[in-house]
Length: 127
Image (cartoon, rainbow, N blue to C red):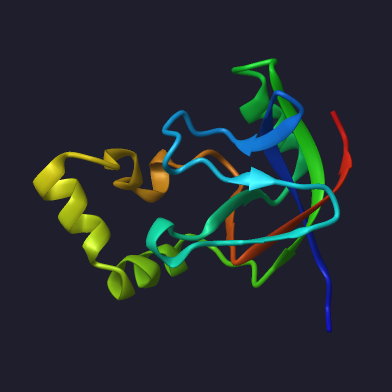
């Protein structure tokens, strides 16, 4: 099986590594050398295809860390539409409760080099 590698930008809080999301109910904890799988109700996981794109994203917040990671089933933006198609309750939450509005985006709104994956395993801290 072919291995795919990418870069994940995470935030360290109290010696734990989390996704860079402020909403605690959507925050994902990452662990070194352990696979983290996406939750269908939350959508796919985001990583950066190239280090330079991860570094550019990190430049807005120096508290973030960049990790090289192994990923499973990488894809481009088109798969996210499929993900929302199979989990339409996300749109109901957005429309009725005005929650998770950050999940509404267009391709242009995603950070440059964003790639969607099913699983992420952090390998080594790069920066």
